[in-house]
Image 1 (cartoon, rainbow, N blue to C red):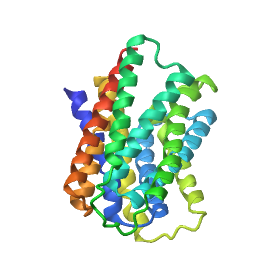
Image 2 (tube, one colour):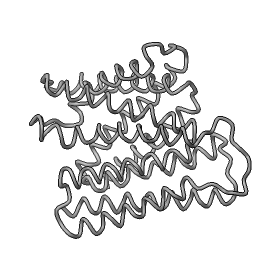
Image 3 (cartoon, rainbow, N blue to C red):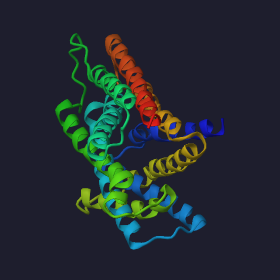
Image 4 (tube, helix red, strand yellow):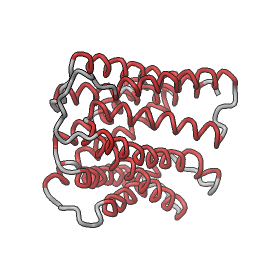
Length: 295
C-alpha cells in the first residue's frame, strides 16, 4: 500500500508539468531553462543529504543524459504550444513508450519470453489506436485554433521522442553495456541536472531572456525532481511494474487539465475522441508494464 501511495506523487507531479508550465507562461526556451533550474535545486538538496560518490564516468553519463532530456522536454513544450496540451501530452507519452520499448526489445533483447511478446505487441497496438483518437479532429469543426499548427507540433514531437528515448536508453542500457557503469537515480540526478541546464542554454543559443517566466518555471523543475524521487521510492517498495504503470496515469491529468484550465476548446466528438485515446493509452501502458513484469 505504501508503494502505491508513493506512486501517486509522480502521477500528479509529472502529469501537471505541461499544464503548470502553460499557466506560468513563457516560451519553450524559458520554460525549459526554468524547469532545469528547479530540477538542479532538488538534485542539489538530495545530494547534500545523501552525499553520493560521483566518478567522472557517472558525471559524464549523467551530463549527456541531461542533454538528451532537454531535447525531449524542449520538443514537448513546443508540441504543446502547437497542438495543445490535451493533444500533445498523450501523443508524446505514448510515442516514448512505443519507440522506447521497440528499441529495448530489438536492440537490447529486454523481452525473452513468448508471453512478453504477445502482451507487449497487443499493448503497442492499443497505444497506436490511442494515438489516432488523441489526435483525431472533428471534421465539422471548422474553427482554426490560434497558434495551432499540427505539422510543427508533430515535428516537435518527433525530436522530443528521440531525445527522451535516448536519455532513457543511455541510463537503462548503454551505461552498463558500453561503459560498465552502475548507479541509482539519486546518484545520477545531480550531474544530469547540470547537463540539463547546459542543454537548455544551448537550445536557446545562450540568448534566453532571463525574465520572470524563467523563474516561475522553476516550479516545474521542482515538480519533476520530486516526482523522480517518489518514483524511485515506489519502485523499491511496490516494484517497477506498479510504479511504471501508475506514472503513466499522469497523462489523464494533463489531458483533462488542458481542456478545463487552459481553455482548449473541443467539440463533443473531440471530447469523446480524447477520452477514448486517453483510456487506450493508459491501458496500453499498463499492458506494457505487465509484459515487463513477466521477464
